Image 1 (cartoon, one colour):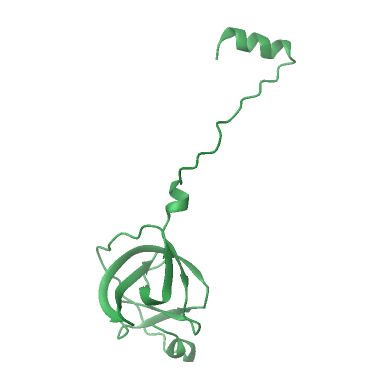
Image 2: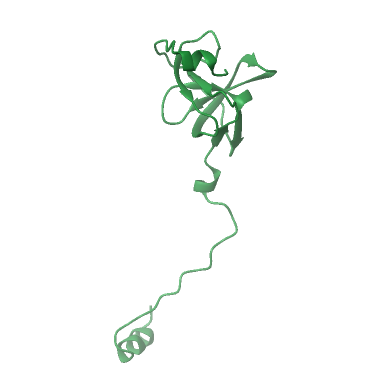
Length: 126
């Protein structure tokens, strides 16, 4: 800031208004974060591994939005071999029942958990 600008601001009562640059049309990292929406009307099982033989750890309800950490090629579900690892916890969901947005990178490792054998999880997809 120049001395002239400071002198002008002082003459105007000490207030100096800085104008921020206009918003860019380029998407930011916040807009590019991978997330998905559950499309299975009966809900979607969260699993310990990317397989329907794996322990159920929870159930995501229809239209629930979740963050996606990464994806892996594993057991095919409804013709789709992709599974997503949730961002918030080490649970897997079948990509067949997710409408995703953003770039989802490939995964590098897997996790474990206990079986959730609730009636709700038995009725859910994946």
